[in-house]
Length: 332
Image 1 (cartoon, rainbow, N blue to C red):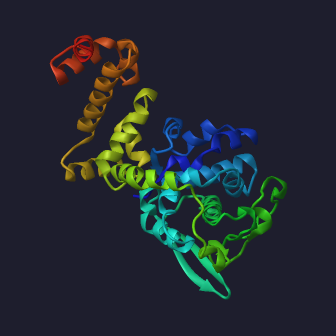
Image 2: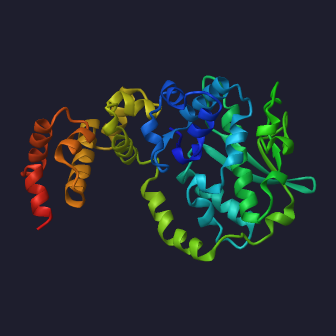
């Protein structure tokens, strides 16, 4: 089960809309929900992201869509991990640390460094597939890698030597893709070639930010580790509740699992979908009642209840109090 932060697609909807396609329709047709893109730390299926990018490239008639999107983004779309690893004494050690911890933001991708002539090859490999291929995913990922390497080295990202195994596009929109002029197609690997002098540099990032990320962000990322299936299911439930799409089938689809397989995996973890749904609803309800003045009717709808009476009965069965009583007690 390979998952990735939805933040890796930062700017996707605006870019696709700018090319005249409907990003919401594309997201839904790829088995995802637009709700999952509201929080960049939400994990989504890597293979469904690959399918979304391929569908979008076709709809937009943009064979370089992945590279264009990467060219509009910065290292921050991968979360705080690039900043965190920049505490290393050199760029090559920072990239090695990134490779060791990349599973925290993207599971199913591997980075390796090796010499190639007088340059260094930084290669990406994916354990990901989709029915329409992964060319756009590779474009986006290699572009993200270039952004990270250049950001750490304090260099021009559009001067890097990008390598892609895929063939060159038949009608590239070179004017709209700043990475195109430095991209080599039909290569024998996916990644970038870097001057070794860049890799010996000290990473160029703000030290105060680095210390903050070291002490706080890694702990947060580990708490959201995508290998924790119950935690991942809770996170998806929280995202989908207000959309009315929060069924076990929808959760399973977003994790690239058959609903039966999801239930079996949850059972092995000592839980099940209905329990996680109840726990998530209760946690959100208690927090909202304690810390906000949201109307109870609105809260019930946001939690996926048909009406306030059903929500009130459920809440009382969880806590022994009505939502109104809970709110009054919490604010005493």
